[in-house]
Image (cartoon, rainbow, N blue to C red; front, side, top):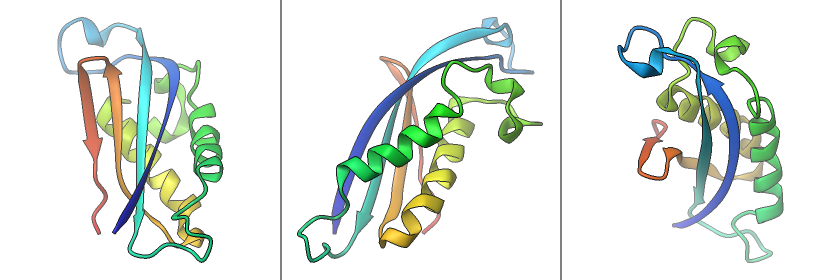
Length: 124
């Protein structure tokens, strides 16, 4: 089994309803995103996936959220744009992009701060 991890970041604002405390107020984060993909075999090139391609796909996804108010985005309509839900959204979006390349998404980790992170692992 081989894994490749790419890391990118984005900044955005959100508020989290019905959780109590300061996070119910509009606030922002500089999110760090780690996406890990995997496959059992390498391609003929000796690569699992070209880092440049994986990074490009992740940037396309993050650009939809960068410097935005997440609560106003259609894909978070009716749900809290929590780090957990952001991780799931990124994972599902990335799965659509990697599918044709023969790799799978192993996990997406979202760092909301330097000491708080969540991980989403899709059902395999």
